[in-house]
Structure formats: structure tokens, C-alpha cells
Image (cartoon, rainbow, N blue to C red):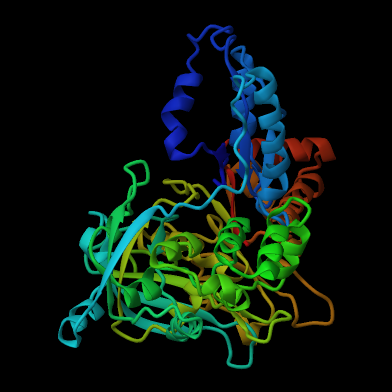
Length: 540
């Protein structure tokens, strides 16, 4: 199985050495003639290089003589059923092929799919006295095991950038980070927490179903087997309150595995039947309609399946509730210009579905609620963008919060006094100038002759204008930068329609201003992609 959500189509870190070995020219063409293999790629079709790693691996193994047991599987996270839509039939086909290729010995049978769930961890607990509980409330479960690259940041400003009457709340959050450095394209990684209201709701549901775990209960978690190690930050004793705030993802949308577990816990035949239905291949549309479409979270599912919830043990909580994952945010500042600070742009996720309660994004709402001087643990890592290190022109297309990584790069050049209107070109789009325009700083730079800023306000007139229209309007200027000065094109923002529309616009630039044929224009953009002169960073 190859998980390749990388925007540039690069292999995952844990595959890198293996891939370098496979690419050795000294390997004979029959190296893998006795090897049979099967590949399932986990990708996202909103990326330009969708499942690129899985496709390359399949091709290379076959070049070396390997034989595929089943056709290449290409899972797509954009599918309404997620990866399962492809993974389920692919796994079934794989088992059939394996059993044909390697028949089981007489008397040995294939295990049933719904095996009894065995908890990964042992959990013992004691109730803390009030005098001892206070110490745990003051510390994060992650502080004792922080990596060497983690550091503290403190909120300096938390500014709403959009007007109060605009439906979308976008925040510019400025953190103090004395002495810490970062580069254009880098991302800031943060660990969000559940909101207090979400924690209270989860604990109420447990209590209503006679799962009585006081918040100050101290958990000691140990391994059931060395094959399933405990995450390092759970090796220390933690309170149930800490787990609810920092570890359990209470906003997670349950997957099929959740219902397999609940089906084993419940003593209600009705609930058991429903869980079994939601775990079958035939029931995946029902699962989608119950969980994915309305964005019903795990807490709400536990309230619906009360006969399963009442049988939850401390050990089974770790099976039913996924862990909160760190979140990446493109850095929207330059450490050279904004000294001792790091900025991020955050679109706060709040929306309605057919459910009564408003849906809240975990990380964005946590960050929007942060008060001045609030401290968080953070670290910096490389993003997917590779900016030129010389004065090569860069054409940046960043509607909405997609502008964040370009703010980093622009102010880096401004501080170095190398920013020019023909080497820093920014296309920014939003709905209304007066409601969700977040480029006031860049507008001043444009007025001062430092950069070129081209704006598209889609709702400020009777017809819609998007960044792709502005790109075509400026075809002559852009073609000169692309064809004569080797300009880069970098695109960031929502993955739905924008990246494809922008790419098509640059193909049009090549046909209209460059006088290329449609095929030549397509080849021109493809060549830019292959040489990293055209890069895309998108998200859902």
C-alpha cells in the first residue's frame, strides 16, 4: 500500500531508500522475475499528480520483471466513500488471487472478517485527590515528550480579517517566536484541542449511559503486546480530562471500523443489525448518508448507539476514538521582515448540514478562540513549494487563504530589497473588496512599486470574475515572464475547481500571447510542471 498525498508526487519518507534502490541503473531487467506484487495507492484526485507514486512504483516493478497479482488500485480521498470505494473490491480481489496462487493447507481456513476486537492497550486508573489534580490541569500531555524541533509560541494578535457581516471568519494570528527561523514555503505545525463545549458534551453522553469516568481520573496506559507500541506521549500518566481535551478527536467522522467495534459492544439486536449493515460493502451508501454527508461526528454517533456506548471500557475508548492529528498551516510572514514572529491565516470552519447543530472545524475554531498570550507548542517543517533562491520572477496565484505562503515569500524579497513589479506578481481573489480582502499589506507594496498585485472580486459586480479571468486578461505580460525570463508559477488554495481553471488559463496564455497551438501550449505547461516551474498546493 502506498499513501501518496504529496502534492509534488514524491514518495513517502519511509519509502525513500527503497525507491532509490529500485532506481539503480545497475539492476538487471530480470531482478524481480520471481516476485509477485500488488499495489494499492491512496491518493487525492484534487492533486495534479494523483497517485503518481503508486503508478511509478507499478511501472518500475514491472520493468524489473515483477508480476502483478491484481490490477493497480487507485484509492481517491475525494470519493464520497473515501479510499474504501476502491480498497474494498481491491482487497477482495487480492485475497482471491493469493488463495489461487498459494492455496491454504488442508484444514486451514480464512479467518472471518469481523474478528473480536482486542484492545491495543491496557488501562489502569485511580481517582486523583483535588490537591493533586491541579498539577495535571496546568500541563499538556505532549510537553514531557516534545521533539527537539518543537518550541513554544505565544499569541500576540488574533485579528478577524473579514467584516463582521461576512459569512466567513478569516483570522490572521500572529505568534511570538523569539529567535526561531523559517523559510519561504515552510509550514507551521500546531496541535489543536477540542473546545470546552465539545468536551462537556462528550462527558455528558458517557455519564448519561452510565460510563462514569470522572475528569480527574488518572490513566496509566501499558502495552498489551510489543507489536503495538504506545504513543510516546501516553507513556506518562494522564488524566481523563487531558485525554478529552488533547488526545481524543471528538469531531472525527466515524469510519466503518468504528461500527465494527460498536456492533461487538452493543447488547441491542437493533443496533447490532444497523452496525453490521454499515460495515458491509452494500451498506457503504448508507454509511455515507448517515455519517459523511451530514458530517455526523463520533460523539453524536455514541449518543445514537446508546446500548454500545454503555458498554465502553476505558480500553475501548482508545479503539473507538481516533487521536487528534497535528495540523499544518502555511506561514504567512517572513522571519526576516517580521522578526521574532510567525503568522498564519486561518479560515474558521463553521457550516450547517441537515443536523441541528452547526458543524465546527476542530483546529480553526480552537485557534479562533485563542486569547492574547496563550501558549502553544509548535514546530516548523518544509512545505511542498520550492521557491527560486535567485531573482527569477514568480507568478503567484492565491485566492482566499491560499495567499498565505506568498506573503512569506513576498516579504522575504521586500526585506532583501529584491522585490520588483516584474519578479513578484500576485493574483489574489475573494468575494468582495469590502468583506474578505486580506491583502492590504500587499496593496501598499503594489502602490509603492515593489510588486504587482492583480485582484479579482467575484461578487462586486453583476457577473463573476475569478483569478483565472485576470490571468487571461494579463496574458501578454505573463507570457513575457514565462517565455523570456523563466518565471515560476505557484498556485495555492481550495482544491475544488480553482487549480484546474488556473492551469487552463495558463494554457490559454500560451495560445493567445505565445501563439502556440493547443497541444504545444499543453506541452509547455506540462514541461513547467516536470521541472518544478509550475507548482500547486491545494487543500479541501
